[in-house]
Image 1 (cartoon, rainbow, N blue to C red):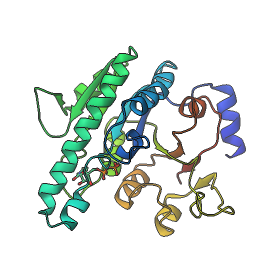
Image 2: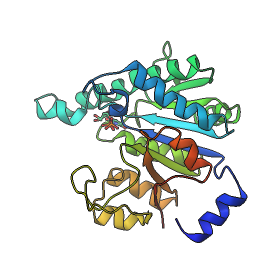
Image 3: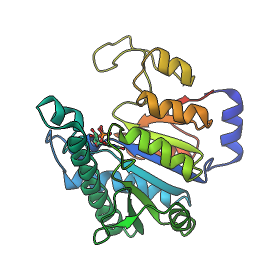
Length: 248
Ligand code: UDP
């Protein structure tokens, strides 16, 4: 963290008014190795509620990799675009699970899908989504971008730009971006900050390249943090904790 950032967070306890939280579908599967683990979904919902309680407007994009990934389907002989649509449908299931957990905690939400399924959730209408955020409803954007050949990282960057979020928070299993896998190498070094171009050139695995480029081209910072740290999401919004900020 730079000295100017430290000063900023000391004067303002909550630095962001509106943020995007991007998590992978795998974050919802717990130790099961597949699918949805409701206690894990609820644990993450509590992390989100803690930030919501600060008055921050929250957008969420959840992946679908705990249920289905288009690339894996096509590697096994499925037609790629069909497999991708299946992946997008998987994200809707995850979004509904998160909606249920958040509403169980008393947080109002909307699931907003890039693919229409009006009986299940709302279609994506940008101005309507902005209104939900203003009313402090957590907006969970489902079905990715609605297009095959994309990922939910890109959907997260796209919706974050459209919703005028001030940052993308990428929740992972580690507290930032490392030069090598910290689970495998004791001498792995965490970056406090890293530029978009360095993240792309060194393939640091922050988000996929299309998502990083979209963030870079719109000066949208990406904060990589650990979702496994209880209270970690709220802590970072209050100016504490460790994370990597990708920007510049
Ligand atoms: N997907 C897609 N277009 C999108 C977003 C997602 O086709 O805009 C499909 C793609 O097949 C992907 C799957 O949905 O593999 C699940 O999303 P993702 O792999 O990003 O999930 P995560 O890895 O974050 O759990």
